[in-house]
Length: 543
Image (tube, rainbow, N blue to C red; front, side, top):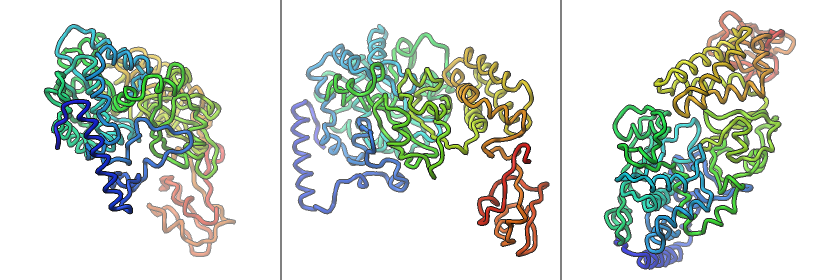
């Protein structure tokens, strides 16, 4: 492997690599360099990253599946590390920060804090040494944006970190990645070793006086470690718990030294901004939310998977243009954005622009990029219970408002879904939401009430139906459902009885069957397997 000591040598190496690749393709024209070639086997199976659809614009995902993530030569062939070499040769740290400021890049981890401003605050801090930290602790259920970039284009993240380190005056960086991402960990470790061998990381980066190196630290899967102060504690070898702010990490972070923390997607944007220009990046998105955003599109949409769209695109365009509509042509009911601490937006808000300000004003949030589409058969009370169960389990328990507040809200939601809700439960949920949001120590507790608050605001009638009518309008909550066989429609085929997991259905062949309500667990398998529509799901006054 060559040792690259200047911008000129990097450009020469790029030309050499491109020439070699052209010769390889010419010699083996059927070999191809298509999207399937460099997707890891697990990703090829579920096709989570297809060709761009609709209004997708790929900046962060530009190289994923198109280059070999384990080949530094492939990355260099796609202008890799030219941005780093350019700033080391031609720009001062202040000019780099100004470029990022002009681009309007905001942190993609959820809060949306201006990246250039964070770098400037860290640079202005008088203490040394300084650190750059990449937050790859992606804990939202169903989210895999960071994982995909680390597995498919790890050098873009390392290059972004190196540029950030040059801008703030740091010589050491850390990537904090969850241990549940073994492919990402292996790929990133290989990328770090390759960069060191080429002279891109180390004491004299690309032959300059700038020194920077990166280490990988793995987390044990605690969701709260996605919060920057808890992440810092974990890197230091302490229990991953948040601490009060201020001081902010830009002033007192890792080992009480100035630290700039950004997530994977933020760093992956930086090289392209440097190479293509701040104006190019700022031309995408809205006035206050520039660029593109990756989302893990999931739920009741025809085309799920990882997407990258310009900020400002509407929910309608994401669901019906990129996602190709709702499964089985059912009606859209809600869209949940922002992960477990995000809000559930009703179908009436389908034309809402997807940007930081609009989502926050609507009672949700951008988050790291989770987006779940729900159809007409979704119970919004059960959805709130599901997210609260996750948040309560992942609460570190350090502060009482989060520890007790989430537990109390989960208890009430569970009772309501069981048909045991009482008058006053809605008001108590609203009170607990206010207290938890106002007094929790970190973003986990402060955002925990969002699923409850948003569903109460937009779907209050469903809560009232559960509590006062003992009815689940969507027929999801098992305790509020009774399955009954219509004798006139039952042919006695015995298929439902054979598929019932607990033997609750009985009857003679070719005669109407019966369901024993005393032992029925309301799993719904019978109604799914009946070919004659002879089984009804009854709820409320029908029950």
